[in-house]
Amino acid sequence: MSSAVTAIDYPVCLRLQGKRVLLIGAGSIAEGRALQLLEAGVRLRVIAPAATDTLRHLATEGRLELVERAYVPGDVAGHAVVFVATDDRRVSLAVAEETRALGIWLNAADEPDLCDFTLPSVGRRGPITVAVSTAGLAPALARTLRRQLVEQVSRHHVRLARLSGWLRERLPRTPGRSRVLRLLVEDEFGGRLARGQRRDAWARLRTEIETLGETR
Ligand SMILES: C[C@@]1(CC(=O)O)c2cc3[nH]c(cc4nc(cc5[nH]c(cc(n2)[C@H]1CCC(=O)O)[C@@](C)(CC(=O)O)[C@@H]5CCC(=O)O)C(CC(=O)O)=C4CCC(=O)O)c(CCC(=O)O)c3CC(=O)O
Ligand SMILES: NC(=O)C1=CN([C@@H]2O[C@H](COP(=O)(O)OP(=O)(O)OC[C@H]3O[C@@H](n4cnc5c(N)ncnc54)[C@H](O)[C@@H]3O)[C@@H](O)[C@H]2O)C=CC1
Image: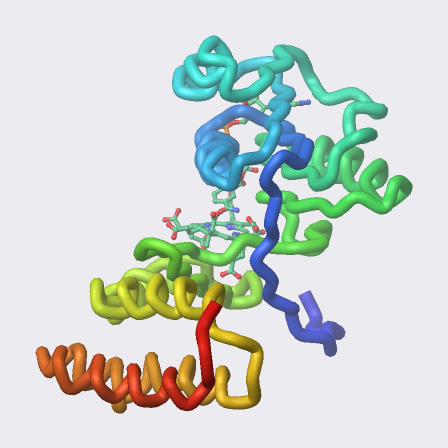
C-alpha cells in the first residue's frame, strides 16, 4: 500500500459505560474484544452464526446479547460504535458501508483501511492504562513494548494516582492547586515517598497544601 496517508492517529480513552455496542463475529478475536468491552461496561450485542464457548456462556449469564445468525444490513443502526471481526472480508466491507452511511464509528479487525479507530495493545495497573499503537504496522511489536512499559508502572505509581484523585476532589481551585498536584508526583513528594522518607514527604506536602487555604 502506498503511503498517501499524511495524518497521524489521534489517541483517546473512550468512556463507553452503558453505551450500546455491536460486535459482528464471535470467534477468538471477537471474544477478546467482547471481554474488554464488557470490562468497560458496555451493553453488548454480538451477531454471528457460530460463537466460542466463552461467548455463549456470557450470553446465558445475561452479560451480553447473542444473536445467532449472519450479519444483515440494518443491524448497525442504534449502536454507538461497531466492531467487526469475522473470517469473511466481504462482511467488513458491507458493515463499513452501513456504518459510514449512519456516521457510526467502526473497528474492523481484518481491514485497517476500513477502521475509524484501531485498537492499541493495552496493559493496566489499577487506574493507570498503558496503550501502545504502531499505526497498524506491527501489532506484535505493540504487544512486546506494552509488556515492557507496563512493567515500569509500580505499586507506588498506582498509590500516587489514587492519592492525586483524592486530593483533586478536595483541593480548592486556587492558582497553587496545580503546583501541589505536580509536586505530589514529582521528586519532592513522590520521590521521597518512594525512597521510604514518608514523614519528610508528608510534611512537605502538608506545608504546600496549607498555603492553599482551607480544603473542602
Ligand atoms: C490495525 C489493527 C486493527 C485493529 O484490530 O484494531 C490490527 C490489524 C491486524 N492485526 C493482525 C495480526 C495480528 N494482530 C496481533 C495482535 C494485536 N493486534 C492489535 C491491534 C491491531 N491489529 C490494530 C493495529 C494496532 C497497532 O497499530 O499496533 C492488538 C495490539 C490489540 C487488540 O487486538 O486488542 C493485539 C495485541 C494485543 C495484546 O496482546 O496486547 C498479532 C500478534 C499475535 O496474535 O500474536 C497479529 C499477528 C502478527 C501480525 O500479523 O503482525 C492482522 C493480520 C490478520 C491476518 O493475517 O489474518 C491485522 C489486519 C491487517 O493488518 O491487515
Ligand atoms: N486485529 C487483530 O488483532 C487480528 C485480526 N485478525 C483477523 O480477525 C478476523 C477474525 O479472526 P478469528 O476470530 O480468529 O476468526 P474465527 O474463524 O475464529 O471466527 C470468525 C467468526 O466470524 C463469524 N462470521 C462469519 N461470517 C459471518 C457473517 N456473515 N456475519 C456474522 N458473523 C460471521 C463466525 O461465525 C465466527 O464467529 C480474521 O479476519 C483475521 O484476519 C486475526 C488476528 C489478529
